[in-house]
Image (tube, rainbow, N blue to C red; front, side, top):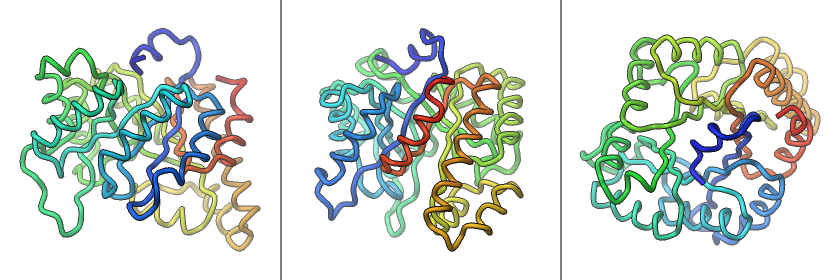
Length: 291
């Protein structure tokens, strides 16, 4: 099933998860039990990343996406980044995905890998979308999603440039969008309004990451540029030395975000699970009847 059809045919809020492959030096089987638990929660789909910093690569992403789809019975989306790939590399990856029946892709520029020389065939995710849709053997098979940034991409000069670039990505073939994480719903609502003004009319899923430890929030804020509302900062200050309390407070904050988003008619919720079945289950249990 193509992810676009979920938004078109479903009368409820689309609810999806993100998982990631194990590190290169860990066997791929090391995540299977977690994936089984997460899949048992029956999200509408699960996306599979390239791994931290894009260093794990395509093969594990494809293998895990296939496992989720065929062994666990959940539609999967494979992340595909392009900045470190040539056209030949992308062609091989697309053939691999197609041969494995993975018809949904999240098209990304990807992170620059330290010490590696970027390829010059693709500069932006919009280039990747345009390329895939230019190939007859791939255009009708793959459904393309894209990323978006409620609080502006870190390399964009301002909101206007960021929305202009997003419009280019959608016009190049991205049929739905998944947002970067955020902790202030008002920032997401303002972003959606800017997108509507720019006539970006594809479904936009809100990316939610439950913060369960202090080091995680420091790392994620640094990577994403997401702002921390005063309410969230107070939670961190109060529970930073109480791991279980901070975990539970982070889950509660994410649930509150999701409830508000659903009440305001969001197209979908994309939960960054961090491969944590416990956290995914607690949030799913709290919101499943609202979807």
